[in-house]
Image 1: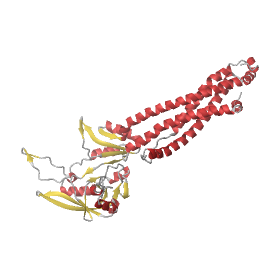
Image 2 (image 1 turned 90 degrees about the horizontal axis):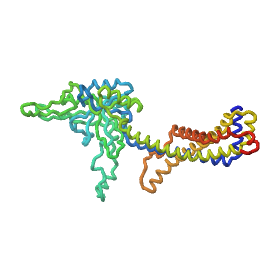
Image 3 (image 1 turned 90 degrees about the vertical axis):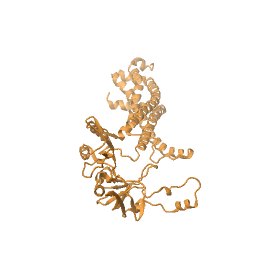
Image 4 (image 1 turned 30 degrees about the vertical axis):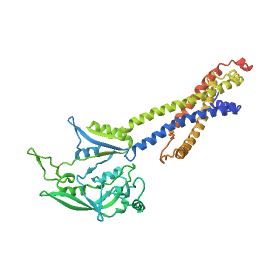
Length: 456
């Protein structure tokens, strides 16, 4: 008996009782949809919560905070360490944050700039790492700087608690002062240093060309000034110390001089070093590689490892519960196939009488039960995607209406990755075939003479 003949026989028999077939497929589809939607909650919450934890931090960033040498931990990273990190495969950039070690009073158009500090960075590396700006561009010349998004904000501009006074209301009606309005203007910075024990101030100027991106956390502000290596060297040339430390006449204790700041020509020390990987898939391997070479590091991959494990256990549990629904639907498939064997006893007898092999007869019934599983899985997957879309659209509105809580726009309650849909289809097909296996074996044992007499 050819396979095409077996398929045609199955199709003919399935059409004989459409109502029973429809109810069986519907039960299978409901079980498959329940499995997918239930598990999709785990995938959706994982994506939303993990993304929220990451916030504005680079997923590909690896923080390098020290190096172990000779069994001792050293938190100071030098040019040699920076060059090594840049040579590691799949590291596209190495960034750092070196703070200027003095207040460095600043003014723009005669207006004093309060708060924040001055930070020296490598803008070439920052460009590769994706340094985010809300306005303007990154510096291209030696005397250009980038300012923080909140640099023009002050505490006086924050609304007071309780009843607002007339003065407060007047301040609130004034137009907001935005940092981007300073783009193109000149910032003056006074470098403090000491000459013969007397404090001196030497002004330097820089052009503002960009504004950093707004911090994603409401409590976080950025009032810093970001400058390149040329401006840092200019400050160091004035102070005669690394990072612009204003060296006061040192006092002695017990006849011994105090610690002296490093000179600009001494090996530079880098802080807040980050190695940026080409992609998130390389982060863990890079971290292990440089840790083996003695560099202590930390990345988002380390933070999320346990979180992802919790969600993995959660998703496995949800898939298991959903599979129970598919197993319940298998009862209907078993009943349908058992009835099919009883109703087609005469057909089975005829096939055996003309020499059909028992394996061919068993294959016909397994093919029919498998087809029921495939149809149910297909319908269930379509329904699941529709339900997932509806949940993500309607649930935030319900939460906002009844609980007066606003859900973030990018929050996903349900997410159905293709792998989940494929897994659900495989489970449905496997359960359907297993449900039809016993009736199929029974069909092969039907006695020809009794079958022809319709006596099974």
